[in-house]
Length: 344
Ligand code: DAU
Image 1 (tube, rainbow, N blue to C red):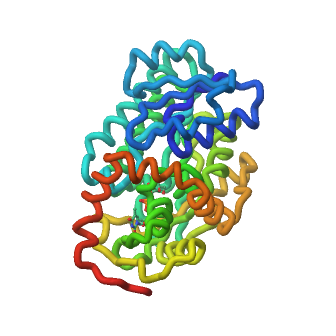
Image 2 (cartoon, protein in one colour):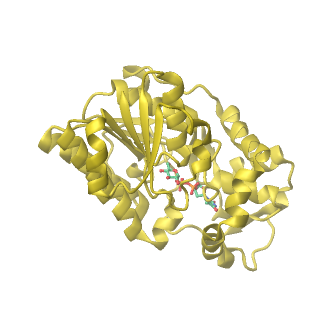
């Protein structure tokens, strides 16, 4: 199979490139990435000299470029996205452009050239799911942030191309993903690296929000299975059984890196903060036979230990890329100013 992997230099995209090259020796991967703040060529270093891999820098919303690449492909797997909820609250337009217009540009190429397209989406399209419930794939889409609304828009565009033009599309809706090489703006890499730097850990609100954590390599394997065996037009939820309250995760992080609970700060909450995501993964497990290979502690410790062992990777971002500091100051300075220690 010849696969265009967009967002290939990102966190889950690069894990997917590794997965395909390891698991399918006959496949060819063309990696595309705009290399915005979160795209990082260091994530693809092992693949650089692999003759089955080629990298192009570019934008998924660039129709001319995508049109040039498409004739030599069988499939597109779209990881390229604006993905951070807090950033979407600051700049919604960037999210609509990448996550809706960008997706439509790829769909146009898939339609014109008869390619299969897999859209990597998110469990956030269901919005907050009350305790005790689990959203199956036919649960209403009720996104609540500009990020998740834009992801839902991209998905709806996929479904419209399937219905209107018969384009071969499949969708995955993944849970909160962690692992090596995640940009340190998301909860776990931010808090691990803050803890290593003896900086405060800004917990939004009461910290009792619930997320369901998934290892990037398990997520990549699920996406690959859906690409090869998923039914056209179908969406597949992807999650492990790792529902945890944020505060519990934060305590686990501090214990693993040997830092005190006094680093925890409860700060002003994220506006519109989704309390819980909860999805039903029966479809992918029973129809395609997927299950995660790692349990909760393997997932968390593999992630934490990678940041401990690879300070050069994250220090290049945190200490030498001004775009990190600019966002960090904008997001956290006012939240952390004058907030005292809390050890609960
Ligand atoms: O559920 C899948 C989604 O998970 C993906 O689609 C998104 O791209 C990804 O960003 C993630 O969304 P979340 O908003 O759940 O992830 P985040 O790491 O930003 O936050 C996880 C939880 O931690 C959430 O309840 C907010 C909280 N949090 C986050 C940050 C960054 C804090 O308490 N403090 C923080 O500084």
